[in-house]
Length: 507
Image (cartoon, rainbow, N blue to C red; front, side, top):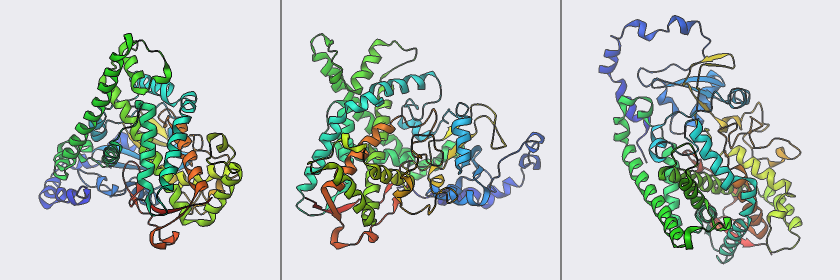
């Protein structure tokens, strides 16, 4: 989509600039006495002006793992003038996310997320403070609590049933399972958050893909403000503004639809919570204005954006990766099918009551999340004051990037770390809820993902029913070993090519 960062940064180190830099006083290029007395993390050599920005590469989680192998699991980079600590070990991640959780609960102000999320008014990128606590509490209570997630069971089971019917009607021809999974997760989110599904769901899917892709792009202007023109040359500014407007128009239409519906209700006093979706609840909060913070329409739209981006792309991608791994590993597929078939006991469809007995299913999903961490680089943290981590001195406003993908493939922790082996999670207490720092697909601590249960409940139900109802081959009779597993880098890592499968009914 954009010219490579390395290509655009090369002119910055041209001869004229290098000659200018030679005139900079030597003391500017040396550490101060204070810095010499501090214990600083190891750091790769950096270039003038851009620091280590060029070393992020086109796939940052891979580039950062390569650098960490040379400079260590606690490594300092300088993105322009911004110090960023890169964490690639479970022990160091635990210090950040548990020992010093409060210190690192802030988010840095990042250019693209700020533009797309109404000045970072969403849950994911909002700075730490009372505003963030309020909107997170509202979202958890009204959408993501255990009680609320369980109340959406019928929606999940109904949409799963529709998916199975669509596949069955394919008549044995090839189907685009990627597209079907996106539609399913989008429909579930729409029903629970907006009260109904939308016919332009695939258009919204395109908006979400662009949204996640842009969030994963490195903005030069974020780290070197006077080089913001580089983002303009790349087309990044234009793309961001265009997408922000399209999303804003979509969210405005949703809110206006709800406002009109509420006006049409007699007296507007309908207290039936079952008929209240997330937007209704947010409008109620706005109307009551009982909170001590400004709850405007932009806040409502930012929360909607979080729910959709966090609930659709990451969820559908996880199921897609799981199916891809199962097709590549037919022995594992057969083992999972045996488990779900025995527990289903001849019923037409697996329900959520059956899932808790499916231990191998849960192991398959954990292994999928380990190998294909939805957010390979967790959303950056920022130190709110000076602190010592792993014996190193960090200054206030130092950013922290945790390479969860690299940690989950650390060969010192995981045997055959790059192999798909769900059995490793059988008879294991390791889980993804944020208490095991070698496995952080949803983050941990105060800024961990609040929607774990919501996402996992969809993943388990859909995957169990897909493998229960169908066998899956590849178009043209290709073997599983030929399946393209190339990923597409972004904030969320997705398969580069859609998963096309040829289903056949098992019963």
